[in-house]
Image 1 (spheres, rainbow, N blue to C red):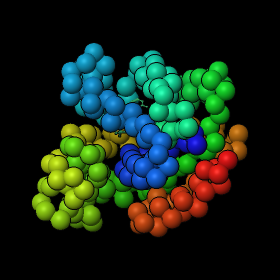
Image 2: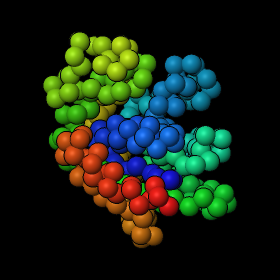
Image 3: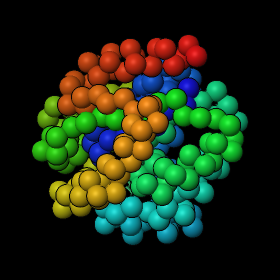
Length: 218
Ligand code: AMP
């Protein structure tokens, strides 16, 4: 199973990709998570990426394409992977196509989660993320049982710097300008599936299971 998740920041890509990846025993490759780890560890990638991330801008394609090329050739990717947060530009989508053609590993699906902007702003500005396992909560609609403690692993919850209201606005603008046009490319080759990302996490999970059942069996 080789699947790309598309959708704006806050559409639920990470939450859903994590669940599916666990069930299917394949990696969820989140470029945002990889970059945040690189920033925390102070690697050269992290140092280059940080300023872009802080502004809510995209990290240059050249860095991202190299990163994904290395990642999808690692041994845990042989039975498939879920890409969460890549591609984010047309240039990245084209590079990914070329890469997968060379590797003879076509994508099976591009799943787009659509959510109105007002709901994305609500979700992102209220989001809290576990420092240890990456699980997401929402201060109003999905609070943790204990304040700022992860229900799953007991880790500390924090607010991402780029979930501040001013940066969220920029991230959504960048999404509409640079990322949303990618869907058309996947629609043309017949692998785009669009789902309502505004429904509940559980309802979306059921819809995704239905969608993925045939491709899992392939
Ligand atoms: P995310 O966690 O997916 O919302 O990503 C957080 C930030 O990481 C984004 O706002 C970008 O600055 C950067 N980022 C993540 N994935 C990509 C990508 N594929 N291309 C460029 N920048 C990215």
